[in-house]
Length: 581
Image 1 (cartoon, rainbow, N blue to C red):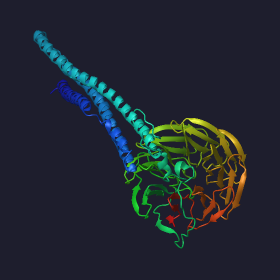
Image 2 (image 1 turned 180 degrees about the horizontal axis):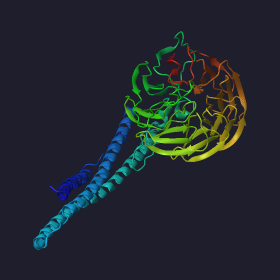
Image 3 (image 1 turned 120 degrees about the vertical axis):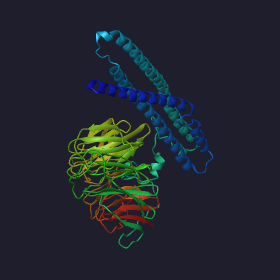
């Protein structure tokens, strides 16, 4: 067989294969159109029926979860059909082009002698007719399929509108039932392609989902908390568990599950405990992430490889490590998604804790090269927005400030404190007021933002403008907390001070024997702050100093306590403690 004959044979097979693909894909798209015309991805009365049940049900929480499951099914159906539509279109286009060019080559005229000219002319005339009808038949079927696919796409638009309308109706119906039910979807926003999947404000405040509690603001809503314990003797220690890997992140809690992470140069893990009895429910070994470096970066002992606080939205828990590995894990310990953000150029090690807002995972990623604020989809890990910020490296964590017209993300870095729109990442205001190595995160309360840094100053800010400044009792590592009309600061020298929010006047201060790295948290009307020896200083959160207790852990700790009803959880240097009366 000569070279020309071989090429024609190849073209023949390519035409047969590509033509078959066009026919199969076109038929599939036609059947797809017929199917969704007969059976919608999700019946429109499903959510309506479930909402009506909210009026009479005694198990409201379970029904809320069922509604979220229905929303999830709607999303899956929508994206499944959309993927089929786009994939089918591309397959048909590419295969169709291959079919046309292969057929043209196969039917290409060959050189003929004059004696055979008339016979050859009749032969090629017949072959041209065959080629013409083949192309017309396949193209006609493909055109019909594409026409129906556009009609299908219109349905997708209607479907996403349906999901949006149904979600709005849920919020409206629940508002008429009662306030707690209203919050199922009151904080939900829906765009043209997805239904929100995130907890309500009430659910967030019922848990301890991030470093310093709900929204990272340092205020817990738990009550009946212990004020006296002894980790050495076991007094009021419900359980104590050795931590398998070192880490400086504090516990986060959702429901009965407690999460921490640990890491060294070679190993990174996320741990989930039953907070009631301390049983280790699962461990996830964080490895095999695309882009993850072969060698971990150098870090200092007081930062380590797992300093960033985790966060959880009740559906998934999220963890970040010193090498830039970011992972999302569901409640059963299954990895949902993971990515590497790039190894941070950080001479101490990365330590900024994670936060979430609605269905966005918020990450402050500052290093010596650039300062960035990210929002990733909590469901898929896809980047929603990225804001490159001016300034230099910091070791602080973002806080979320919910507001009636949206929410703001407040972050510190050198030399700025700034606010960003939580939905878009756009800067709302920025104030230059910090110097040195910025490690203290901001606080919010009473409509004001507060920040400070050692060898710099303390400021109270309202609407992006400095209201007052102070120069005493400046923190180095720990972050302030605002409560009622007060704001509290602790320092690495052992100072604990209370200021008036309005004008920055010192209401009281007290000097303790040991310094504070862990940040103070308000709970049950009391201020809890752990010094570096593991002693928890407990004072009344009031305008006058009143010491309640100084219970000891029995080991060092630079972490921040986490709270559940009647229970405190503290991560020590070696052990995890559950403290309860």
